[in-house]
Image 1 (cartoon, rainbow, N blue to C red):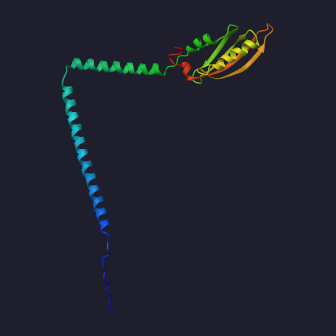
Image 2 (image 1 turned 90 degrees about the horizontal axis):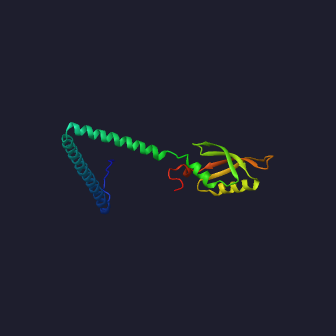
Image 3 (image 1 turned 120 degrees about the vertical axis):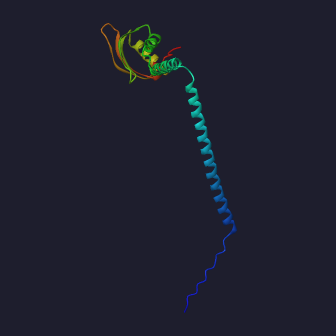
Length: 180
């Protein structure tokens, strides 16, 4: 017995054919426009290079030296401006202490850790009540003081109160335009 196989073409939907050809046409258009834009961009780059060559041909060697000096000065100025922008003004602490210290409080020393923005103040207050008010003033300075802690406070034989504060300062304290 002979094996007669008849292959029949399945009915394909004409919508699938149309969609396939439309997708293929869209892909061809995208590739074509990409090539056109790529070539156009290359032509523009070549024109810019030619204009740059023409520009570099003008001017004397003396003018080019002056131009190079100007660029060197500009670079130095920009570098210096960057240093100033990132430089902290630790002297602002003195203005802050002057503005926020009570009359009955005397600071005898302080240490400052710049990278950690930690300041330790030691001194004497007229009495414990004055020390509490001073602590409150520093605590209320939320704009410049992050946290404040008392490490030590004791009443001296002279009835004054010795203390050691630790203030954690905010970055704004070290900005150039403090208090202006």
